[in-house]
Image (tube, rainbow, N blue to C red; front, side):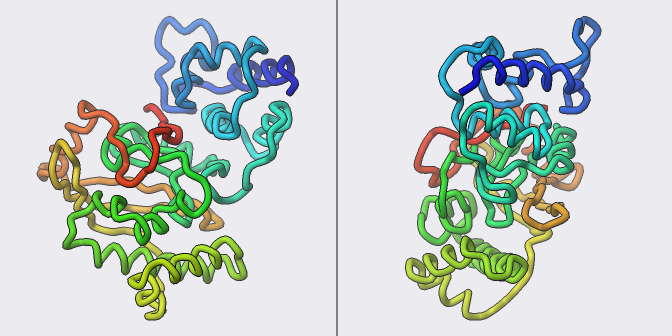
Length: 292
């Protein structure tokens, strides 16, 4: 690992990013045009001391998860992200999908602007890449899992705890929607081994999934009305909307409620509730949360 080169690269990229680019206020007393160290740490979900050590060319080799979070915080493009991984002597993460994927810059930019509504970027297999604080407070901080378990679709049909997010009477609806969405994704990806392995595994482990898969219903999940069970606020009724990346591999999800509704009032309380653990995470380590 090239500590000095990694430190220099991080400093150069931090100086380049303007606060407005990541949804932060410049403020009257800012002495530098770019981001402060503590702001990069906050955006990446790291401690300020840890990030400072990286910029000083010290400390242990950062993990792939930390590097992916820094790439997002510093708004690196694909080539810059790859360079960051090379400097840290880490294998490159998947380019287009998976929990370690590089978030599409356009979707990340929109997420930075969504400071008053829960929002997150997910893959087409429903793996959370990054969340804002309100999304973490609403649906729980996403677990840092790898493999099939990173997909909410997989956990929905294999781990009963994953269903605690929705009322029991809504479970059949969500099961149908998840399977129809996965059918559409499988068709889009073509002969994709990742999807094929997921489908084969779910057919073996879940009779419900196998039955729904054999209906051949196909529908991308573009919008939905959801009732979310929150441990402090009760059942929250919200509309969920999706914006797809150009290749369809990533989606920006955001939750909203009609003005004056009970759901809108409950959303206003989320900021003081704090982050909850997502049902069925199987661990406490989460993926990055974007502060607004």
